[in-house]
Image (cartoon, rainbow, N blue to C red; front, side):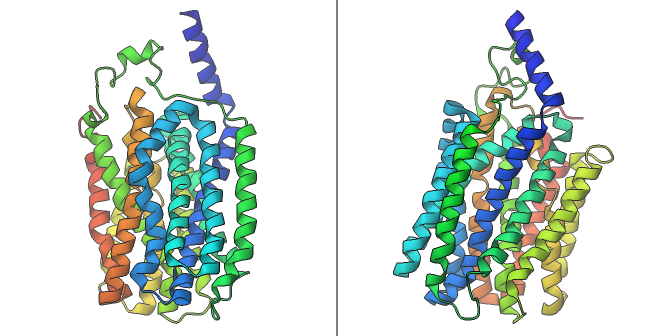
Length: 413
């Protein structure tokens, strides 16, 4: 009884006074996730031109990293429950390093299949790291301000998306593509990711648990999840998985296709256009940091964002190609506060099922791969501007989740 009270006291103190260092370290990991995906965003048109493949095939480079979430999502949850947050983070960097290293023989052999294998291995690292860092940043502090913390993480994540193409463009001449150009930068990236894994092992990250997650605590018996026997008994979580699926699609499409779209429209310095989308996303994240939850709830933030997304996606039907590139850039503003809202809403009330719920949520990220591949297929058939219309039904569902989907099966005021 005394030990339980002491543990609760320590947990409260952690949440109230010692958040700066853990949040900074997790922020670095969100930056890493964005940088790794930003690399693939640049490689898609690069490999397409070098290997003379179709748009749909080139989009498979990023799509395959998302398919891994279905394959490795649940095992990632098992790993997390077995070895904890910190060690799971270390293992994720190991997968990233191996995947990045495989890009070198892929380039030397000019093998598209090996490029896909390298992307798949990177996807293993991304899946495990996403399974770990998203619930960690969600539950490390008060749930009312989870959206603010995730928005801060989003700023770092999307800055990395913008930085990655610009950094790699230093080593790659997009106008005169030679596939061997990627060898030197990828050796450097492997070394950086190995160093990050070592750093994570020694980082001062405490093991934490969600409310009602620890079966030894008295609070677990009175928690709303106490009488649940399966993760499938949480409808709001299952609907949240679909929300993540569709959100991942519209986010990856807007971020990963911008270099390709700028090339498609024959615009100069195409590698800079990802930064425009990222800029709008960062504006949205800053709004979240400033206004959530002090002036607006996470739910209303998601409603405004997804409503704006519906308007932007629909307007593509009526505008010229020169205007459409800016409309697509504004998807970044529409997307910014969706992820920070879905995670706390979907994980709320799961108690001891939190880690399992997290692993289930990350499987939804496969939507980024599936919708991106469909986008590439539609581009080949109907042109790139028309392909972006695939975002409309996604935003409509996300708006529904913010209205009532997050309340299904729960007593939420």
